[in-house]
Length: 114
Length: 111
Image (cartoon, rainbow over all chains, first blue to last red; front, side, top):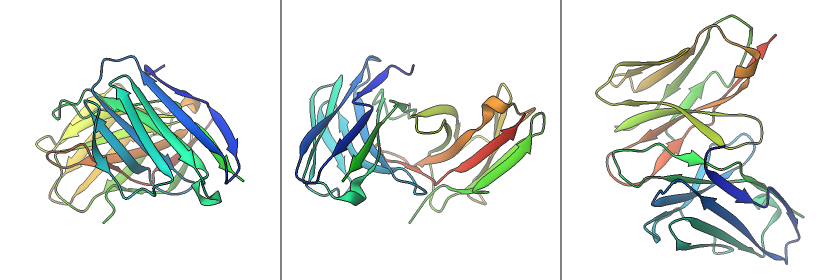
């Protein structure tokens, strides 16, 4: 257990569905991240929030919409996804002190878009 | 440009042998980290080495960093079947929150 939880762990959705991924961290961290991990590709950083403000948006399509209501919770809202969006979505957190760069990852949500 | 490219892509060894994985990167860094990922799970941080450090140890792990060659290596000594996982290097420049991960080395340790 890393102190970062993600729900659901598995999700199957159609291209017209709307769903949300949830991440919660119990570490008192101030920065939270969404990553996409596709087969045989490096981890792709999607979004970073620091103190509930979005500080990185890595050219992610608008069908992915992040939300950070407080420093402990992070959501990724999904709508009209494409089959190529099927991947493992990982959430991470860090203390947001830039001298401490270790990130703590959740177990991920395995997403399949049909 | 992509940072943190690992070599080899896959490695299969016998239990008890040492495993060495290499990582190369392209631009200047503030630090380099190694993470481990069991199949379909989240990443777990193993060790961080700063740009002014050359070598670091943690248990059976030994990491080296050569900033002149822009490369790092991770050595796992006396490997165990439980070490079977994917290993990623990740680099971070000065400032910002962006940590860039490589594609990883898949290690398989046979019992």
